[in-house]
Amino acid sequence: MWTHTSWQGRLLTHPLPGHERLRHYASWCDAVEANTTFYATPTRETVASWARQTHPDFRFVIKLPKSITHDRRLTDVDEALGTLLDAVEPLGSRAHALWIQLPGSFGPADVAVLARFLRRLPASHRYAVEVRHRAFFDDPSATRLLEGVLARVDAEWIPFDTTGFFDSPPTSDAERDAWTKKPRMPLRCHALTRHPIVRYLGRDDAARTVDGWRRWVDVVVGWLREGRSPTVFVHTPDNADAPTLARRFHTDVRRRIPELAALPDPIPVAAPTLF
Image (cartoon, rainbow, N blue to C red):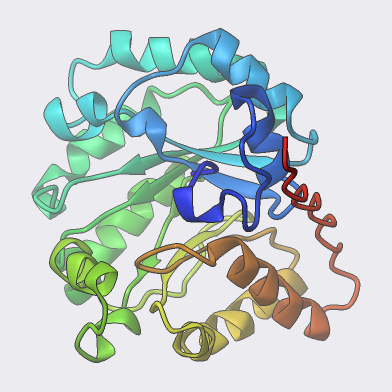
């Protein structure tokens, strides 16, 4: 998620060779959702280039391949999982968490499968699970069941907050597209570990996006004061201004936690030339 077309030439220098694009993105934000791994596992050489382009404190939240989570539903996946773990090894500590996003059909009856899968994972990584079955949010017994399984292996539950997005009908093509694709889950603001991860979806109107994240500023400030180290990803349907919005969220939190480290200064966008 560091080569978005609408950022090129506006937020990031364009054109850039492949081995420079992440470095420029990392001057805006200090974390990224590695979503491409959902569709294909990169080579070790590619991942090594990611490491070279980022500071050791940069955070990758790496989504497990679709073949593991959706096609095989966490069963008989040793080979695919081993391939991914080998591929991401060059990241070292930059691999902040492996992100297990489960399909909407994966419900409370499947939690035993998740528990077996989590118990077999190597302790060398941190893990975070995103569920999209409504029962986990609406049924207290299902909530407790999932939280118990995650707590036993110190895994986090990733909330994907779309509540503000679905507050009112869409007003743009990108919003209309997201309206049909994004999950509609109740709000969840509870952390299980020292390293909570939040995914937040706003609107293409920046003011509405900022208004919708105010409760997350309160939550993140509370987590920081508790000694937790949260990671927050800010999305909009078109993601055109996602990096600037992410920095604004960080600024809102830092106003209340001044000791929070500043983000780096973005690499200036190179001025166009005639040649």
